[in-house]
Length: 360
Image (cartoon, rainbow, N blue to C red; front, side):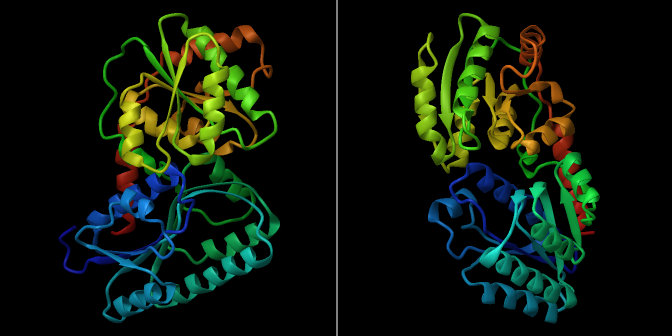
């Protein structure tokens, strides 16, 4: 905790996909990033599974867990009555789609609460977010909300351009919150002996077949003498992961899973030399440990990954489904991607500086 005379009380409401390790990770890293600038963290945990709370390491000094929304908001009011600086961080992550019916009512109720808290001096912030394919109702709701926030920072330039085109206020780009994992540069280059495949296959018809073909393309580029493993860090990836291991052909694949457990996943990636995935936080968690990744197969539903690659200056390490470019140049691009290492320590430093600037 920092040593200024009047320190902030920081509020975070946990409302996300509890089964997704990536969502747990970015919430954990948000807590870790704001904690040095806060006297106390107040975390709303109502309805949160025990496993998710354990992932976030909430049982520690300086963290107050609150169940209900009323108690969460009342503590903001009390802190402001005591003239304390109060920050309320909204949910990070990727957003897409439309809001209608009851969901739309929920979002507008949330907007009303944000507007009321702003009136009493609460600084409402949202960082580590990306947007794509939003409906008209959602954009209208977002314009209202972000005109009342203290800070709104997206995680890629593609999202920034999308918001600007739709007249949604945004303060700029900061690295994804998971870049806080990159606390050291990758070790010296070594041979690729173990490869991890981890794919989601629930976004469009035929996505499993695209993933299988892409895994086989990577195997062709690597040649002999390589071990292959399939890993699922999200529950719904387990069944297709087992199927991929069975249908991959040639070298036998080992299948493993650790859905919902951040540290187990990170230890797993310590044991591989290359991660091949179409999941954004598999990519970043794996690369934080082994330094190497290939992103694919990507479709039009994965704009946040294209945005991430552009942010890193590594767009050539991302691949669409097979057949969308000539085989020769594609094979050359895969071989080139195998030789790249990601050093994101500078992005981690930039992320920490952006968060610190919010509390100045």
